[in-house]
Image (cartoon, rainbow over all chains, first blue to last red):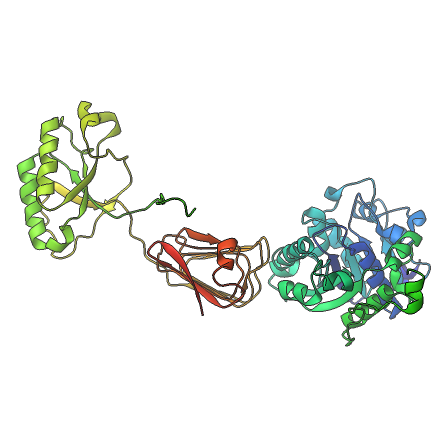
Length: 282
Length: 241
């Protein structure tokens, strides 16, 4: 872990800070943070994912590194540990690091100066900083989005999630550092998760165009509801590494779009069950 | 709602306040006659409130009654009276016209000709303050999101959508060049001529000068289409554009 000591080339690096947020809980923020962070690292960018959900830490579980957590984000803010002590290097993906949240503290442990100090130090070494926001619109969520350059708003195709996403978009535009300093506004992207084409067809869920119409921000991707996501979470592997699954491929597409490439949307149509699938009740 | 044959509503009316300085019926009537002769249409059937709060001496009941009669005789309509709270006459309960609570007032602008500098016994005042409508217009090009509130002193122009759960308010008109899904309140300081225009009417609530309509009613009139909202005789009209 000596790269922190030698890596600094003097110039202030232009790391891009991306917050993954939603307002509502349980929509897939941490799953998406893990998948997108891994996807960016796979493209060769040095990436760190920070868990801002102090008190309810989950990112380390999804990333499968919970047993390697010694120091955490709050320790670094309180100067009880250095960044290099707290950062966990991912075992599967080169260039990927995790900064875990504290499980024994609460969101009040996050101070604006403390967060800013950690981000500035990380910006010297990393190309991308992914901030995994807690649910809600209170202090923890506001800390996670305050310094962001871009925001990925994770939304489920149902009205309460869409309403909360709209609320968080308002906060991004009014309470972020970019808004307060009158700079270019935060780039906003919509990531629609847990999409179920069959239920959309039945009118039980909002369609992609319904959500796009209400939120009026660019669509980064649509992740279909998939068993693979739950399986990956339980195994502690980011779902993007499961290249067999639709969810994994949809996340890969989303990362490519984030990097400015064009990718057509897939997995939005109802799959026709094949003969064998029907026979086996699949 | 349709079962009731009437609706009770609050209303604010500008009236003339006759603030009496010294009680002398002959003087008051004579001077008022002069004034009325100068601008007859201004006082014709004008609602008037008799204010006794500046009168220092005690007012006898019959003197008050005959003053009211004389005022009505001049073509004015006495709709109420007022007196100092601590100096309420004993006969106040016997008067048939309503006793009104005290309020802040300012001098009325009586139309031309301007009255002379000599201090008269009668001062005419309005009860409701006049307001200047500011002409400034606020233009916003970004969506108004749920939980956000925007207020403009003049007109408000939004070049994007107003999300459900957002609220836009203006003293003047509101234009939304996108979908209006939240709440829009125009003429919030009582401008009855204010209107709301939107490209797609999907509002939770629209209001003009306090007269409002909710989504349920709007859906039956114009929905998901361009519309304007205006006030016609105390009721909101939603008209397709």
